[in-house]
Image 1 (cartoon, rainbow, N blue to C red):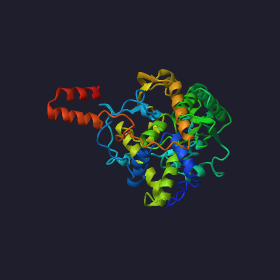
Image 2 (tube, helix red, strand yellow; image 1 turned 120 degrees about the vertical axis):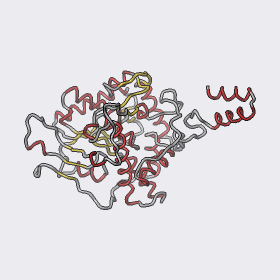
Image 3 (tube, rainbow, N blue to C red; image 1 turned 135 degrees about the vertical axis):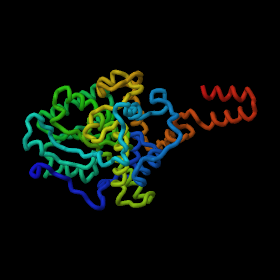
Image 4 (cartoon, rainbow, N blue to C red; image 1 turned 45 degrees about the horizontal axis):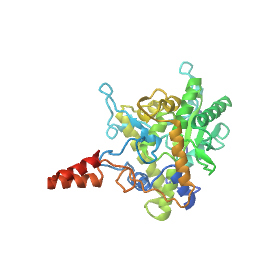
Length: 394
């Protein structure tokens, strides 16, 4: 253990949130391409960094499922977290934190039937959420500089999603054959003529492909992506095979907040954001009575709503999906729609409207028109007013 185990260096003050900050136009392009709204910036990312925990909501979810929605929704919205059943009680993630752990090991998994010193050749991290400093240490010359493979998720626009996933899986298989220990799935380098494959689809496809070949234990999958922002996103990526996640776009947004002076405690924003994500992951794991993130990784503890079997079988095999819906072509069309907006400098960043009602945003069951007509009908007793209310509801 003393000879084999490595730990990453840490700083008392985290100054490496984003060593290469985007300019305003580049940041706006990335935000639009990865479907980030002003609402999500202010109500999700900023709150995680300031309060070190998720934002508190009260009204419940009165928005439509992703397929009937009139807006482009994230593939993460198709996934619903499962809860513990009677025989498997949940954990109290606040009072029983001592039995919970997000410790993540980077290294090759060896056979339990042949225990030897090679089992200890691991880098141990306290969390699967990477900072820029920790990612650079992992890929540095003293660690895995020669034993990692970069797999670009940015591929030609005309390439159908199934073929794009096949290409990514083939690259992953070749990397394992070349004795690489880390696969970096990255959508970091956007180009106007190319289109990113969503990180969740790519992670699930690569994970299942390597499992089918019996090669999954030989590598670690690190996802460097702009799509992961809140704890649910990280839980989905880890639940479908990611060893660790580097959310570079969230850090870039926090860097921009600090530059504008919109948030105080500028030097600690990245660290506070990661603490908020870790608290959210503990909460999600505790729902299923799981105490260690290594037990959650690859467990697929979700139910899918509104994804067609052709997508589920390709990237999320084994997950329950009772209601059919979006196919590969639909997901590809969504990405193309986001790309048209992203590369048009005249298109502003969307306001959002998913968490709170915004005129022209996501539809809400309990929108102001419904409430106003219901109150008017009740107060007046006018049947015509009630018909107007019923029409709006239906």
